[in-house]
Length: 482
Ligand code: BUP
Image (cartoon, rainbow, N blue to C red; front, side, top):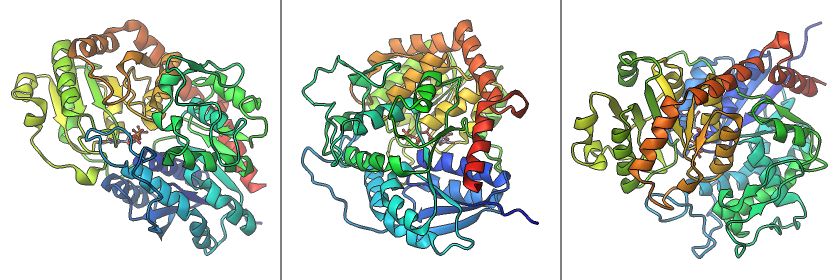
């Protein structure tokens, strides 16, 4: 008899950081003989998302795709203190990604109608956290199991679910956090886990009426009803937290969890040669520092210039990706020269290159010339550094990133200077930056511990030696088949 392979529908929400891990999971499931449908909500907010989706689909001809129009509803936002703004370089207006999460979140129940038209019907849906509360009941009515793929660290997940759900009222307000609490205080999270300084908690969480807090609270409540929670993390990297989750110490009645990270990169068949890879080819091994703050952090010009001076002072070779807007569509090709200050490019042309466009980050991290990574600690970037044992200078900017930076430091993958604060909070001076850069590029000890992380990441996929992520993925697939 022929085996019936499960048909999995993959439903990311919005933003590159939420899309990338879903594409990786789709690719992994597709090579594990699952039939996969990629469900995307169109139009995407950024050009980067559109490009990633089309690259993915052209290198995965067996993956089916289903486009669903975004249900455009006016955002439920007031313009008073409860608005959705996070700190951006311009410091104005609500964050467009927050508004999109909200629209996606509120469209979720409509998505399930489209899922019900798929043939064969999906054996399971893997959805983003922003979709869970809208999906749960509708999928249950259709008899389709729902799994959630978490796109952050298990530590940040534990912190938020604990804060949001432990003792939470049904409206999802957070009794444990109050604005008037001293900022120096540490927040207790589940037994056995290190406390979290208040200064590491994303500022929106101190406001129960903030759009992001409300959205996360209602979706987190729905987590109790999903069939499984999948993480892009691995045992040795977040040992304490993963154990606490598995032992139900974080929340007593969470569904089964499946840590299956680092999610494997998928092969992009049309990988090209870029000017920056040509330049990297000419640099000595492990001599170049790669700097990127992810797809949606726009630094202000003053901080950009200070970082430039820091790079100059450090004497280190660098490949620096600069962004000045939250959404890539808004980016103008204004002069990098002007942005960086007169003469910077000229003075550093022998040892550095500045790029103001999308780069192939994995190609860069794989290049032998690259020996360090300054990152905003978006979780995908963290996992990409971890699987390559790449020493990291953690410079968190918003959201989950300070908690992720803590994880990086604890695991021995990199260093984090807590005092640097959130993006735009204070100006980090060139001298301080230069010192940290030299530390990351020159520390033998850090190179050794980071490389150990890379080895552990490799072992977690080793089928012959009981690799934990390999085992978890098999468990996950059999839980769907059964
Ligand atoms: Br920018 C950029 N090239 O130029 P994170 C990003 N990436 O390949 P997020 C590129 O996008 P936040 C570029 O490798 C990673 O897989 C990168 O995800 C890739 O952060 C992904 O690191 C970015 O989780 O920002 O979502 O961009 O965490 O600040 O919301």
